Image 1 (cartoon, helix red, strand yellow):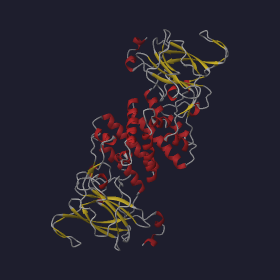
Image 2 (cartoon, rainbow over the protein chains, first blue to last red):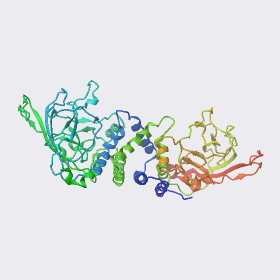
Image 3 (spheres, each protein chain N blue to C red):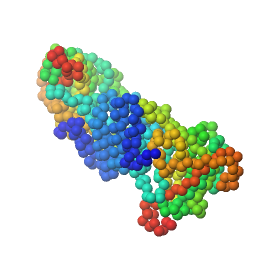
Image 4 (cartoon, rainbow over the protein chains, first blue to last red):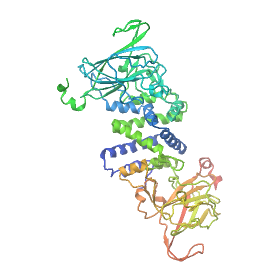
Length: 297
Length: 297
């Protein structure tokens, strides 16, 4: 009988997983036990603190539903989601950085022609977007599938609006021969992540706010390239330095420069202030394509 | 704008907790982020693996109910509960080691006089227990409150039996002037922890079994001493080396020596084989009492 104490129990538990058939699962549980035990030894929780952790995790699971994923929110607010993103997207020169998908993406959004207005009549400051999608070296990706989605002028996505029927401020466009899409929308706004659950309690207890800075989401797919999931953030937003989910990267901030009334690039006559976003996105080659880069151009 | 990558994000997240008012909470969240990020960097989860973890934790929370606590079971099976126990019970010489409380303790169990039978007629091999409770130096703790509980001959606790009314195989006794309690019961048996949920899935995927070796639970309270929560395990049990919750310590194993038919210590005539447990338990002084040990004798 090998007696275990607070120092030797970790090896004992890891040893118990020795017959795990899947080597990857074995690696994960061994590492989990190692780091989890180190955490416990580090903070030396009282029994009451341990029970508090059990209850926090239980509440986090129980508030999850078809329309809410509190464990993803916990992962987001502890920086784990962005860490997993960084590990899975080590980007080469010329490729646009990635950030979190977020909970508001909807599969198969409505399709728009180039130049269309995706705002579905939602009020806000008009925004004209001219985006180009290329290889890391700048070769246009004609036909790329470009999904965009964003919050409205009050900080809500369409799926959070019970008064809306159908999509608004989201859509799918296809890049033209220059690899470009153009569309009208409205300027996105900052918004809080859901904070009426355990994650909100954690933010409150640690004096953190739940806000995300204003941003426009993109998900871009092109054959031979890794699908790009990212946002472009609006420069000057007060939450850029303190995004609740740590999603901001400086290369993803754009001034969305304000424009005086006049004629827009597509000839539309603007009688009020509007903004524009001109941005070039570089996509990373998928691993198989990277082996034969010449074939991709 | 400080740009973060997979290495610098940890400091960025820890910095975000800098205004946490409660210094203990601040210490805990900082350590959590540090160790959690180290774990993620160590295993480099794919997006699918990360989503698998989110779903495992969600299922673990959602199966919890008034009568089931799957996160405690997860803590138990990962050795965390015993690690927390070890950290909170660094025992002096002469004090009995502790182990997990388990989910089957019931507050305010039925009270029995010394010498009573607590089995409520449950079938099994008769067991006579003679236990003494003392200070670490061996001074008897007269009047100590002794709660005992155990599984039946089929591996179930009374609270798991829908066909039972009232308690069986559990009770409260009070130590006599020699610090002793004596009672009749039946020999406890091995049993599996609940394995029809996410924790059971983890055990199956890692080829671990859900069994706990046979044991008799004790919770002992005496003024001026830390309440002792422990089990005494039956020597020879096939699961002693592989308790699913890592609760076994060699000092807590006893042969429960089998006895031939004849006369028991209390004069009861036994016409079949029976077992006995004679055990001395040492209790640790509570911190306040330790400052004035002479007053405790």
